[in-house]
Image (cartoon, rainbow, N blue to C red; front, side, top):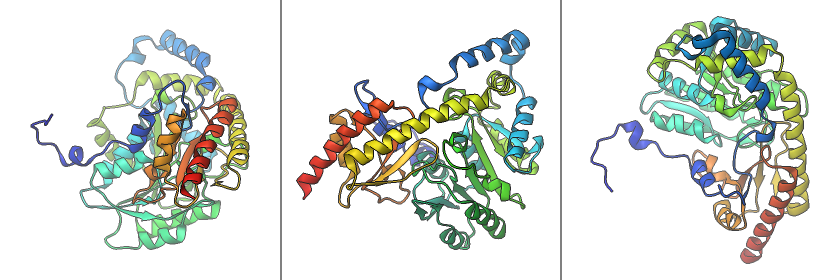
Length: 398
């Protein structure tokens, strides 16, 4: 039915995430799904959060349920946390958001006009693409490497183009969807390029706390001496997605503008949730929680590596992340992952075709597999089903 209204340019141009549509096709409980980006439900800190909810309500009462400014104890904890990670910041640099996606939207509102240039990785999270699309940005893409992430030489070339880009977005740790991480030397270079070309770079970093192998890296923001890098963090993957709580690290002068923009969206983040998060953090529960969560993620990642080798070894290649939630798989040339998806769902196994993350198209023979929310037993069975589907498809096309 036709709706007789005139929509804004934002509403008319914005498209639903292809990834969401594909995930909706794989909701049956009988489907083994590698499609989501969820932490393991059975490893969320349910009882600890229950204790924190009760403690906040008992101590703070109705104050916790009212409107209120960003909760200072949370900003203080986050400033100290970022300082431990090598970032030079104070409480004045911390801006609370309702998740990292809201941070992306606020920054898009702050910097982008219709037709304004924005720099994105050629393959990136669909939410980043939607924020750019929603504001009519003219997107310039930078190639990515399956071992080192964003191509910094190409980034320099793109940032030097005229007219100057208004904004750039980079995922440095355990990239969604690639799983790769940017080396330290490249991080320093990205910060230097942002400053030299006067293009603010958003460091979208929800995954770095999910490291389960190797040595932790300093954020790009730790190399930023000019205030050209804006850091985005989130509690969604490290604590609980439904809390919808995140933060930015930005120059203090920028925080004032962010605050005004934020008021036009939802005023502020939940006082209650901010206080619950602080209760959890100050009880010292984050590190042991992450230790057990990352141990489970490592077991599941290793189970996925073993199953890929067993079922698809010699047919496909894949990235080998040291953390995060995802593995990127490259199929044989000529195999269309979108078509493979339909056959896979019929066999009750699901994934996300890689083309869903490609800003300018292509990458048809790729897929993203999530391992964090799938048990090792289901990983083995799911890859058995997926391997059978791919082998049948190759037999048909040969």
